[in-house]
Structure formats: structure tokens, C-alpha cells
Image 1: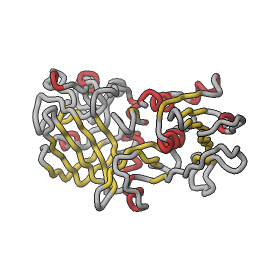
Image 2: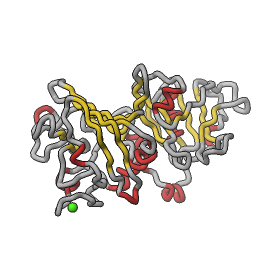
Image 3: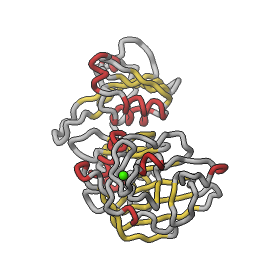
Length: 320
Ligand SMILES: [Ca+2]
């Protein structure tokens, strides 16, 4: 799944000039197959095979028109939305003009954020939803967590070290990873998501299954011209406050140093973060297993709870 998600994020429009069709496939549920195509700006159609659970994504619409008599196929194609508030394509599904072997699927709902999803009756906590954080930009897949009162948008998660978080500026700006696994939603999305007041909640779990949280009543990310500066305040919780140290810092990556240190913190600690000189928290640092939980480079760090220590499970989520 990670591989497919990376493929559709990494194929650039330039490549499509020379290769006017790409195909990516993996095993997914129908709804996730639909969401993947929706979230990819280059996916124009998809076919899902129910027997094998294969999801094939295409950069052309040709494959969305069945010509054979296959059964158990669901064809997905995109069209522009009727409501012209967005130029983004949204999926249209197998209709009457296609063969009778088509399955019928429901178009996915799209939301601005997970609170919007909650307000519209969504309650499937932990599922990935298609979010339009900005009407002018491409949609993004993100996991929503719902409680009794609200919807939280997952913006970052560490679980097992399967995704490399030592990445450059462009990838941190636009996001990477798999929303249902290890994930970074992207600074550009964070800028749009935090235009209205947002709280931040950080969950930390060590390798012995002890967990604590750090909450902030205000969390805001400025635009790219401001290097996605972090504004954070109003700590509460039991993990200690390791993020206020980074307040008002721009974001830094190994290829773009905006930190408060003569050297490059992002290069030294191998992650993108709002480094100063250098850190009290480093949740995008290198993931370590239980046998290496006290690495010299600090790893996935939150000093206010324990240090040196690299936490096992971490996620950051935002909500109203
Ligand atoms: Ca520096």
C-alpha cells in the first residue's frame, strides 16, 4: 500500500509528457481505491477487481470503459464537479452507458477537514477521508479520528519506521507516506487547515506501552513565504511542554536551513522540523526500535517526558 501511494504522489506531470499513461496497482478496498484516485491529481480513472481486491489506477480515461464481459469490476472515472467552486476533478462512477456488469458505487464525500466530516455525520473513526483543504489545490487523503463532540484531522504519525522521514523541503511541503500508516500531511495543507483556529493534540507512547499527551489550545502554520512558521501556545497535558521551545521558528529540512543554529539541525538529526538550536521535540526524527530506544541522535524525541529517548508511537492531530 505504501508503495502505491508513493507512486501516485511521486509521478510528476513532466513524466506524463513522455509516458502519457501510467498504471499503478495494489490491493485495496473499493472505497480506498476510489479515494486514492480522487487524491491523485494524475489519476483519471481506476478499475477495481473484486475477486483479487486489485486496484488499478490510470493517468488516462481509456481504461475506465469496459469492453469485455468481465464481472466483478468497478470502473471509476473522473469528471469536473458540477458546482464550479473547484477546478479539481472528482470521481464519477460507472453509469448507464457502461456495461451491465458494472457495480455501482457511491461517490466519496469530500470535506474541508475532519470537523467538517463530523458535522456531516461521519463517524468512522480511523478511516481515511478525502479532504479539500483549499478549493484551488489538489485534495489530500487524511485519517479522521472522531470522539463524541468533534472530528480530529491526523496530520502526522509514526508507528514502525517503514517510512523515511529524512526528506527535503518539497516533500515536507506537499506531504508523504501513507495516511493509514506513517504519514506527514504536508506543510501546505497545514497552512490551509490552520487558517481557522485549531487545537493541537500530540499522543506519545514509549516502547513499554506507557502513553501521555501534550495539548495546545492554539496551533497555526504560516505560509511558505514565512517558511511555514510555527505558532503554538496554551499547553496542557501530562507529557510536558516540548513544543513551545519551537514557537515562531520556520520549518527546516536538510536542503533548506531556517533554524537558529550555526549548523544544520535537520542534517544532524535527520528530519524536517521547526528547529531552533536545535530542539526540545523532534517528532519527525529517525524512528528506533525498543533495542535502540536511547539513540545518540535522539530519534523521535520529546525531551519534556524523557531524554535521550526515541518514542515508539506518535501522532499529531488538529481540531476545533
Ligand atoms: Ca543553521
